[in-house]
Amino acid sequence: MLNTASALIDLPALSHNLQVVRALAPRCRIMALLKADAYGHGALPAARALAGADGFAVARLQEALQLREAGIAHRLLLLGTLLDQAELALCSQQNIDVTAHDRTSVAAIAACARERPLRVWLKLDCGMHRLGLDPAAFVAAERLLSGQPGVSELIHMTHFSSTREVSSSVMAQQIERFLACHALNPERAISVANSVVLIARPELRVDWVRPGIMLYGENPLAADFELPRPLRAVMTLRARVIAVREIAAGESVGYDGCWSSSRPSRIATLGIGYGDGYPRLAGNGTPVCINGQRAELVGRVSMDSIAIDVTDCADVAVADEATLWGPKLPVATIADCARTTSYQLFTGVGQRVSREYID
Ligand SMILES: *Cc1c(COP(=O)(O)O)cnc(C)c1O
View 1 (cartoon, rainbow, N blue to C red):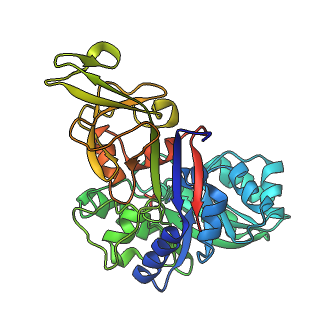
View 2: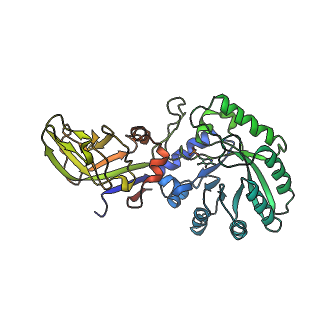
């Protein structure tokens, strides 16, 4: 038993979720998001389980190169990042699509594509103001890049800022800005849909969709949009009990005594903490599953451990395994308890947590 904290990764669930995306967008090509080590699930095993996708997108060149080195032959998209001429030449050589997202990257890509082949995703800033060209620069870039002999394909892309309000006027305005720019060369393929957009805006399921979080089992709009086939949670985060103790009523647990027992209580200490990626802001009462029963987090999360109240749970012993999130304990619930998102929880699962894969 080398590790007290482990993440079980259900690869068939990942493949299942890809099928759900296929069913939703049967006429689209799927660019599956593998950035940040496949949202903490492990980029290579995830790529293999998602082999049915049409391509994979990552955020950094190093992530794309790791996939190529491992023999992943799919189309790869490098989202907006810094790339010098040598790196662009490497993208060309390794057949990695690049994103032109500001004037600097447009100029660099145009220079590279004077001689070398490159597939380019031209990104509009439709209102998020993070990455992407303003409309005037987008028009100029479309003209410049389409004149380069190496540019074999130019795809119009954007990324919307809404994570929930997909029917808002903000969203409508952002769509309008994108369509106005796309209209300049309507033959180009389009890519605009992340998970939220894919789920909530069927009319934007066109050409290339870019699902991320839904592949890993979370419907970010679960409250409002039920999917025809439910997604399956891919990751189960688990930790073993490393100690059990009885405390009297009125005793406190953890740093600074943020929780006190109102009755004689049994407290189990689990070998997982914020140093493993369990969120430090998870408060008293955050649910944990142990031996099929529900327990609650008590006291502050430490670096290497947390405490749970198991007074009402039968038979909790050292070395038993608890579940912090997984198919029966939605990561979204834990994210709410910790005032964060499932994205941050998944990507924060640390190197110290061993990954085990179900094939
Ligand atoms: C991460 C990302 C996505 C996927 O977003 P999800 O909300 O995880 O579906 C799509 N497009 C871009 C540009 C991204 O950075």
